[in-house]
Image (cartoon, rainbow, N blue to C red):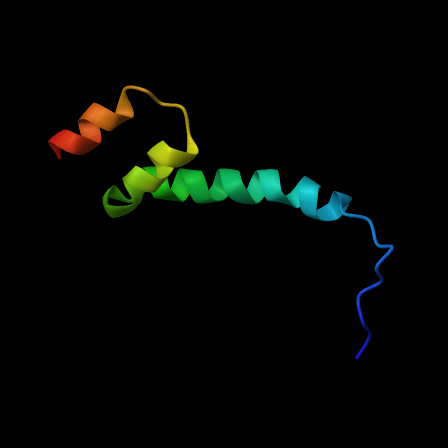
Length: 54
């Protein structure tokens, strides 16, 4: 097994984290049980009252 190179670049992780987080947020927005997670991840100020009323 090869060990991770300590000099490897952090940029691939930084580049991939944004689309992965976006996918997770979209999934959470469309699953009612996970909607509170989407609210925490996002900035939709109108979503919180909708979640509390459900």
